[in-house]
Length: 128
Image (cartoon, rainbow, N blue to C red; front, side, top):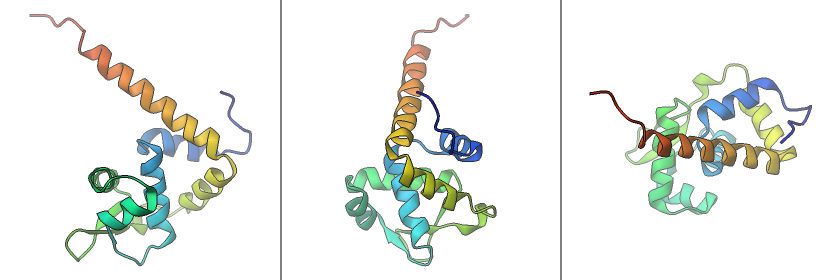
């Protein structure tokens, strides 16, 4: 899979290190587009077409990665503007809009590769 020339290296690096799935990226973009709003798991689930349980896990992952925060209201989340001093999210949104299939494939390939690595770890022999 050849990388298009107009995808900045920092966007690729960010996706490789901090995005676990396409729904993670979709949720992050959603919260980024509306940084003043507080989002519930139910509302995020409906907007990115996943179950409430899956949305809850995605939001917790994004909190763990330092990309969103829990809001003052219990059970709500909001975009954390503090991590993005270089306006990287603007670049990510633009790239995702232009290269949706490439970015989705990149994320899926990364996820599949990590799953294979985890599976292989189960069969590694350990020294006594």
